[in-house]
Image 1 (cartoon, rainbow, N blue to C red):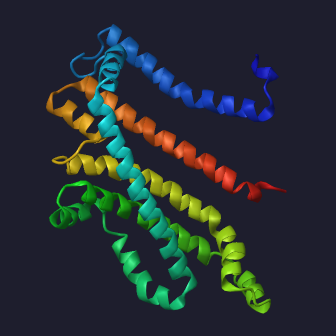
Image 2: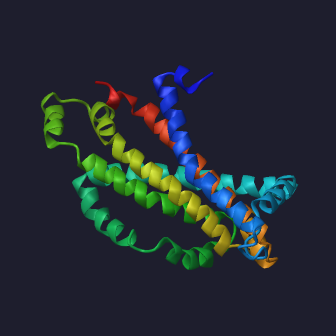
Image 3: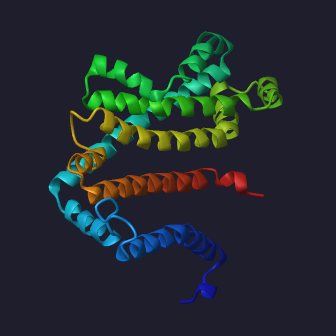
Length: 264
């Protein structure tokens, strides 16, 4: 099958994939040549082949699957809680003047605090276990999702709200047919940012709360402690690949859910 025989959509996907792979493939090729020609210190920058060998060794270890599963579990739990809470809170402060008056000022102040500044307080009360890491991930997701949901609901024209009031639409009907469709694009922006922050927080919490549990972050920590550069590079590449996969899946879901906005 040739590229010309593909339909327009498939050809476009293939072209995008090729464009996305040009720079990584060129980088790996340059990396391999630099290692082969001894342009770099092999103790500091091992060859791609050595990193691949290390990857095969690590992937065969049962502890890897355990740590990978724990990282994914923390990420999904924290993301789910933070996303749901963020969407509900954003809708609340955007739809209710009283709630906006009560909660919005505090929310905008608290979201200015660096997420990592919360870690000492979280570890003081919850220790360095699974719960502390999940809470940290939840907070990292909550703020971007809540903010973009708030902006999305607030951006809905008052004319549409007035139409709903004139026709006396039930609040639940107006919510389903007016608020959610109108704010859905902004909500998905928040969900996508939240997914990125969730994965960063997952790995960050494993770095900074490393005395308890397993996870992908522990791969890099073990590599640093043993000065195993191959293990460090493999851990970094794996963490990045998982993040790209998450983002790709959510983008696909967003495209399917919001397909109605592309009609016409």
